[in-house]
Image (tube, rainbow, N blue to C red; front, side, top):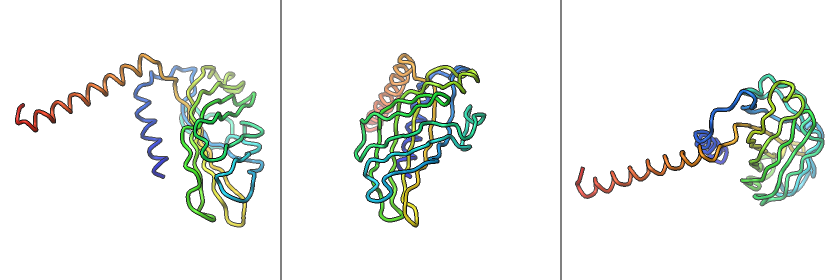
Length: 200
């Protein structure tokens, strides 16, 4: 939970450096289901996994709320063994689109038995597929995928997946944001120094 909240906080900060999304950019989030299999079905969650027949579900917000439920995301998605940070991660389908990114966080297995879980976060770029292009969303956007693997009672695994998209940050916008934050910290530091010495 702490990692998830930390990611949301970081995403909120990054969003302040992003120019407003254009009408042809799809922004929001959508959930994925694994309609096929999750293998291997036993052993540590730190292993590499293969998720088959991944499709969209009706958990969505933003522009994604109008998207069709059950659209194929990929026939097979591979999750690397722990620690997968830095590894390339991708999925692709003609109708949904193509996402290519790198793993930026991998919790490794936390807990044991049916309480065991593992969370992976991937950041990259998403190119809309034919269904999105037909709806007017044809711009490449920044995407982040959160994958949570869990053991379930009776054996086997479950996977919760949320995919979010936002406008790609422009370098000039991020530079201004960094300069602004840097100036704010400098001002606070100077103010603190003045208070310590008794100057106003």
